Image 1: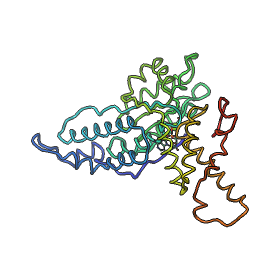
Image 2: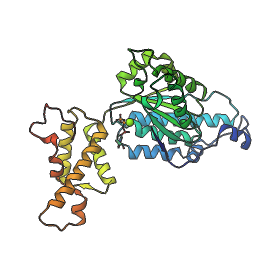
Image 3: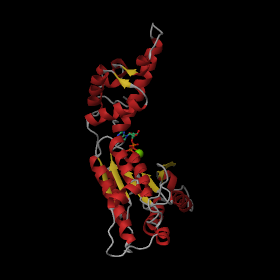
Image 4: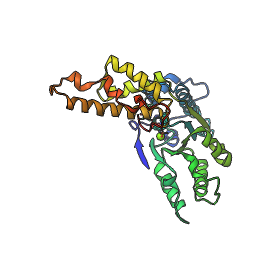
Length: 326
Ligand SMILES: Nc1ncnc2c1ncn2[C@@H]1O[C@H](COP(=O)(O)OP(=O)(O)OP(=O)(O)O)[C@@H](O)[C@H]1O
Ligand SMILES: [Mg+2]
């Protein structure tokens, strides 16, 4: 299990209770500047960073902007004294490995916090092993402990379908699901649950757990990245580490990605990250092994074609064979 704190804690409007104490209700004739409310909340900052720092993911970005708008409008309605149940925000993120589900969940936590939906805005990321025990009486305390830690933030359950074993309905996973269902209903103003995993397995999971399906308000689909997007991601990642690719290396990178996407164990942006890490390793090895030991800044910061060409992806026997790493 991992916990991550996202962004700076900056509640937009405080909790509903605090608002009631601090802010007088607006009369029906009053007019509110939504743009100003937006600015004050800091959501533009999160949405802008989402847009510039994350490549592609257009449908995901649109959904997040929609959720942000919904919460903003909800908060402004509250200022007129409109009392309605808060919108349900439990979500399901489906997509192949490395499509950005965890990364986006982290930003979602930040956004929900800025909009005052959750108190803390942290993300607790878990899998079945963190929730389900191995003997009678073990599961409930484990699940409750995780929920307690996630309160005030986002509980991200990766590969959520492993909680339910079709072949064994007496599996302890069912107990964990029952507890989660209760909490998702009764604590939905201070805990957002995000289930993540492959689309087809998630569908099977929901079919077997209609209670879970009915509590999920937003289904967000993470598409695979195109080769051009993967290239942009690679360039961004190397840049973050103060490396650059020479012009020839850019050509090789493109070729590398075109081959890699069709090979087994391809995991989108995650594979790109791994590939760039290996290129960095080869670059270092190349520099250290050089006959001329003198290096300059350009040499230290440039990835050259050979740093990528040494990959097994380019091996003569790569096509058609299992390539576990790039
Ligand atoms: N749109 C993007 N732009 C740039 N980098 C990205 C993008 N999406 C993901 N990454 C990077 O790719 C890596 C994998 O992303 P992440 O872990 O969020 O994917 P995931 O869908 O949760 O994968 P998995 O299914 O394997 O858990 C991370 O290092 C992340 O920073
Ligand atoms: Mg992930």
